[in-house]
Length: 95
Image (cartoon, rainbow, N blue to C red):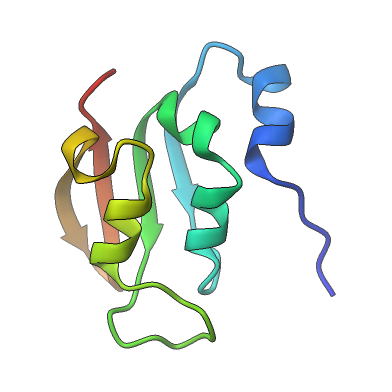
């Protein structure tokens, strides 16, 4: 059992001006992080997260689904590149 807290529950208190970079390696829970961190992510310039198009974990979303799930979807987030070990770097086009 691992304790967790939605990103949006602490983000406004500790990073009220937004974040430059979010690094997420969540062992298949990237979609949950996006769902629980919509405010935090929308106010961040870059998001770097691991993905697998062939899921390794139950409920894991493929890259296109993660991209679409980001606040504002594919229109607000540019995929800058895919890096070693299937990590995607996204840039918020509104910040």
